Length: 91
Image (cartoon, rainbow, N blue to C red):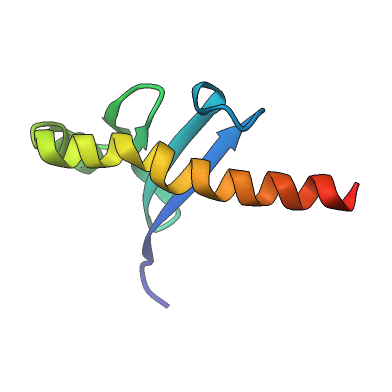
């Protein structure tokens, strides 16, 4: 027994075009999401007192924010192109 802390990255999309893709990274502690980055919002949002403090700290780091915004293209676009082509060849 104990507490579990983890981070989940996901891509939400309805086409392979970059404008139709959203990158979301959620930060979870003990089954409760305390903060999230969304490429649609363009910054971190905190959902708990701890999350708000972390979101403020992360949002004040311009370099880190640029890095997170680039994840949509680096992480999502790359993988969606691969998965989309694989789905088309099977249909």
